[in-house]
Image 1 (tube, helix red, strand yellow):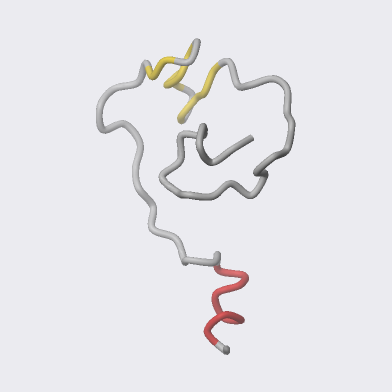
Image 2: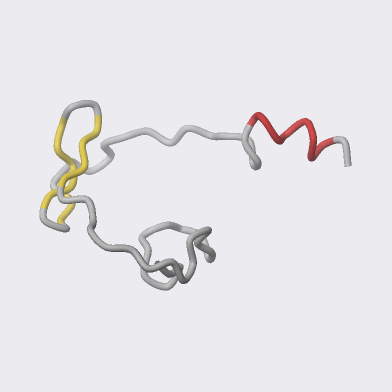
Length: 66
């Protein structure tokens, strides 16, 4: 795995250098197929951005204490 090849909007990958095999064939969102055969087949605007704490709610209070 590498941050250079993943489809995330970040410049790191927690699993950098880990060798893996396999991949997801189909991705579902609320019961509807949105990715199949490496192609996005959903509709534009499908899904919803949900703002989260930078470090997750479990760590947020510990980070704030620093």
